Length: 266
Image (tube, rainbow, N blue to C red; front, side):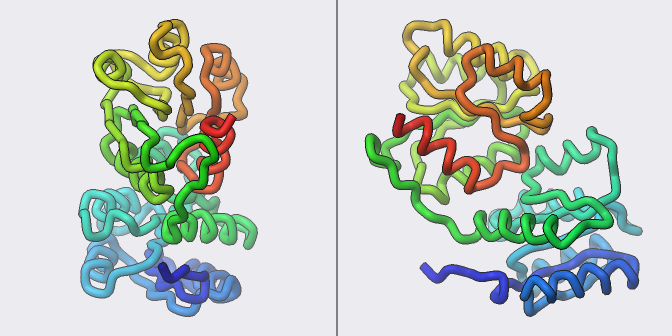
C-alpha cells in the first residue's frame, strides 16, 4: 500500500477569518503540505468534501452557519468519508464543548493560536490514521485477537474500531455501556477490553472492577479511554481498579499500538 506523506496531503481548511486562514495556510505550507483549499462555512465545507474529497479537514469551532462539530459529525456519519481525519483549531476552554469533539472522533485539537509543534503533532496523528500498519505480535496472530470495545458514543466506537482495524484487529464486538459489556463477557471470550470511562448504567470503573474480580475474566487486559487527562489525580485512582493502561481521547494510533504490544506480548 502506498504510504501518504505530508507533501501528498490535500487539506480542506474551514476558517471564516481571512487573516486566520492565511496564517494557518502559511503554517501548513511550511510543514510541506502542498494542497490547501480554504472555505468559510459549514455548507461550503460539506460541499467541498462531497465534491473533491480530502485527506484531512482542519476547522475552527464557530462558523456563521453552525460549528466545526457539524462538519465532524457529517464526516463520521458517512461511510464514504468516515476515515477522513478531522483536526479542530480553537481557543475554546470549555471541557464539555471540547469533549463533544473527542467523543465524535476528532484526530487532534490544536489551541488557537497554536505553535508549529502543535500543528506537526496534529498532522502526524492524522497521518497515523491514514497510513494503517498491521500490528506485529509475538504471542498472538493479530487477526485472532478478540476485542470488546465499550463506549456509549457510537461515533467514538466507530473511531476506535477504525484505529484497531487499521492495525489488523478484526475480531471486534461493541457494547454501548458497561451493563451491555457484561452480557457479552458472559457469553464470549475476549483477549482485550477497550472501554470508555464515563458511561450511563455502568461506567468504565465499575466494569473494570467486575472484570478484574471475576475469576473467569480477571486475566483480560483493560485499556481505559477517557476524555479526561490520563495524568489527572482522578484518573490515576482509576488504575487501582485493575486497569492496565489509560489512553486519552483523541485515540492515537502510535500510542495505542505501543500499549497493545506491551499488554498482549507481556
